[in-house]
Image 1 (tube, rainbow, N blue to C red):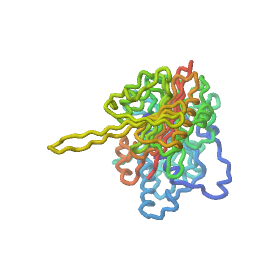
Image 2: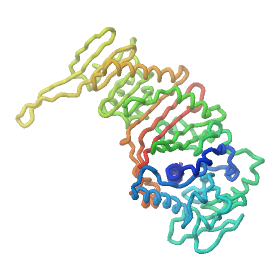
Image 3: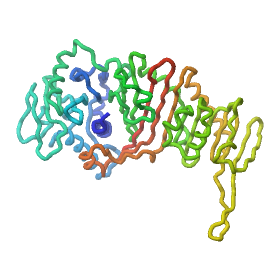
Image 4: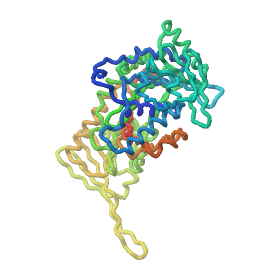
Length: 486
């Protein structure tokens, strides 16, 4: 996926979500059209690499936060709005966006072998009384129906180069005039063919913002080893905005395998989300830990896995919060793992306490060290091991009984979701606002110059679930990202 286009889509989504509200109580009672029935779909040419569809209701531009009376914040919101539109080549002048835009938008990209970057096509509906002149604010009139018009703004940003207005009040803008012709021809043939993503829309018809592509925006699991090049697999991403968070949910779809949104609803609804205070929750088999999750674990955990590789079929759960971490796995009575054999603990002392059927152990070490003729006591971090209820838990803090019950329940719930026929199953839930900071969009240098001092986006939470069973060729993969907007 081209990050440049993705950044534009994210910013446009923010503009639509943050900057708009329903016009009136009467408008609120109107039933919106399902996205699969939008008339704008007929203007989408085939063979696009990326497609974004938006169908938000009748809108009215307001402050990004009605409770925020800070004039500086209000000015910043207007600046962000104008920056996005100007970057696309749209200059509203004294016009207001809510008086022009009529609630239908598509953005699509297409391969261009002659250029290093893809071509872009943007189609949106305007109100019947509005024209191209209301969008471009040029010193001269250019509006015409059914004619491709070249846009040239000297010494100004101009992401789109050509524009066209249809008889039914749709604006078609593109970096290549051939795409505009293809879009018009597509509308003429629409009744004779099916919409490219008609089947993928099943289960998504009530969504207001959908992105179709063949690549994930960001994924731990998506790589060439697991996913061979397969044009039949489509990634659908929905955009929603709630409590100042932009929420992106992505689904890997394949109609021939009957992998649709309903499949993911069943999978995600069965999952227990990371409701505790753990910043990182990871469940996977031992073979995939180092490959997928090395950046998320500390040195001890990594060394532990390296010495634990004899139990290659084990499922492991990691919970990490601040400096506290724990590792849980099933006890293997035939080949019981002995924590004392870890090289990292070879010089540690061990004390064990038995309570009922549970075994609690502590590994500790104190030594004396001489430095500059001064003798000092060095105390190493304690390591704890608990064997309880068929699980062995290793941690750097002493776990109480209530926490132990929660861990056990979480582990076995995740194991049940794996199913016996699943040879690949992993879940990663990260709640750490400091883990992946995105202060601005580095792939958009021009737009970045305009917004980097007034808009900050941080990755607040990310969830990934991957599952593959025999004899499926490719797994099902779900990702969810929550971006905090400041």
